[in-house]
Amino acid sequence: MKNTIVTITAAAEAHIQQNIKKRGSGMGFRLSIKKTGCSGYAYVPDIIDNPKEKDIHMMAANGLNVYIDPECAPMIQGILIDYVADKTGLKQKRLVFINPNETNRCGCGESFTIE
Image (tube, rainbow, N blue to C red; front, side, top):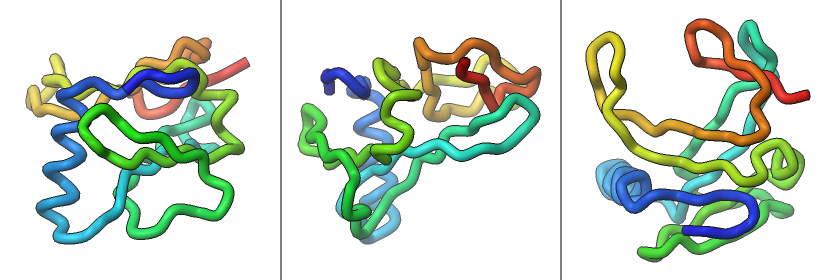
């Protein structure tokens, strides 16, 4: 899915759709960020049953409803969401967020900074 806020790869979309199916309910995927961690912010991906009133709605290529928290949209503008094998630790697959607005990441990779 391409647009000015987010791009979701086919692998990430398939992973999210599979999680919605496993969960047994959910109308889509929502992305927001929160203040946390040692660097400042963390991504908050979520499968939701209902979007928030002011969420920005987009449709991914294979029909996934995607909702973006409008307050964090400027901080994630141009983000790429992918689903890849983690090259460290247990080598598990996970969603990764490649955000061109990040200026730094903490050592553990859980939080990031935007200036």
